[in-house]
Length: 296
Image (cartoon, rainbow, N blue to C red; front, side):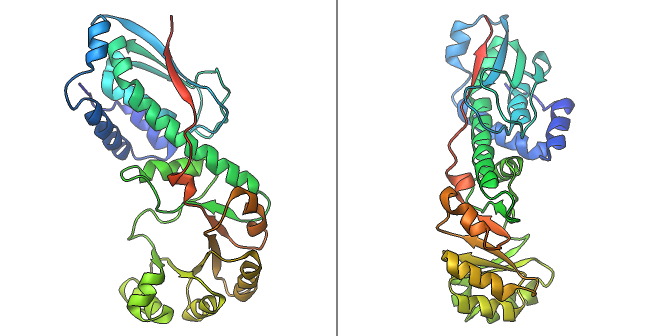
């Protein structure tokens, strides 16, 4: 049923900063779910095999786009060269309800088979980008950036973190091996912050290293241990300000995490922290409503 991803669509994904192989793997997994028991019986029963149609992916609400080329790749993988894809809006753009962001023309059966998978991805990614934009706007001018976490949907991390970037956020580590984050369980296992930091530095001396702290005393210990980044876990605004003073002139950066919401974002960002870590960007973002409709 599915075909190889064409070069033009792969190039569009690469231009967006996505790995086409990763995107294709995600799409094929999604299509395997839909086609696990055979072809689309509803579509094949109601649509003539030789029918051709044009359809539009159109926003129904205001938000930030992410995943338009991903959606296009779904139609491409299902219909192949028989499907013509026309992208109207780039990721990162603010949507205008009623104006198509993607138009596809091809065998009607292919378009309808691909429809739900394409919408699932572009609606989800655009929802993440839209929520991230709200956070980025809330802390604009403070010098802080909103950052995601590893609280991502299994299998979708690369795409979800891409959507965060499109919304104006920045990414935390992508996996467990590109940066170290010493958390409370690591501290307990190692016997203290200093011991945990020394252990990581022995194993991976060049890797970026962050330590999670629950108290100001732990912040002092982390600074003394020579960390690069301190995560302030559920700190009050007052204690966050104190932590900012503690690291002043040391080169240590600070990341606020826990107990954050949009109403408090600007207040926390104004303390002087470098990042606000917001797991909700990926684990709780509502989808942006986009639909797919065949033209009459």
